[in-house]
Image (tube, rainbow, N blue to C red; front, top):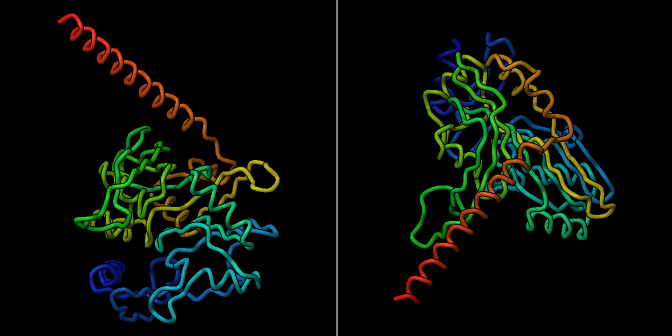
Length: 314
């Protein structure tokens, strides 16, 4: 029954409307057309608000929800729910993929929207993600690979844009061939983390677009991972009004916690993610990168100087 249900979902586009825990019963299967997603109805008061002030609010975005209203009528949008919850005009500051959960920021005034958008544009907001990937990822590193503005095949006139992601491995489970990664994207290209991890051949689990199909089915059956293994953990920035450092942290959803435990990743290795971020490791990597770039620039300048002197002698 388990295998039949999962294979139906993956290959026949069936969506399980009701799921009872324990992997022992599934009810009410409905056919879902391409481009549509069956999601559980959420009332505004059910949204998990993780921080709220007079001029902005942050929620823990559930999976399968769009930030903005889609092209199809009736498609759910979180912006509408937040507007109903706050009874005010709201300004979405950034986006998360539909399949990604985590911290999502909305301004409640034009002034705050301008200030927060400015922080994102200047890359003054540090974003942190929890990633569950296939394979033994490197202990730490950086992916510096340009990406197109939109995911998919590159058009003839589509420019490649600068994209950089720092990461470090938290743990590796040899028996499951799974790594837990903390990722910090510098830029914010569409599907950036998903595309970068695929580029270095450590794709996210549960990623039907950039991952491995066989692994997608395996982890859904064995670990109950019926979602993308990506969660936006936190946003860190200097508060535009009071000037204090602000850390907005989104707790890891229960469904992802359960899958991590089934993957033999103990809570002691990821529960601390919900504490104030420690970017010491990142600062060390950035310093190493800057020192390397400085040394390369110095070496290049010396070579040019030597070439110039040689020409003068000739």
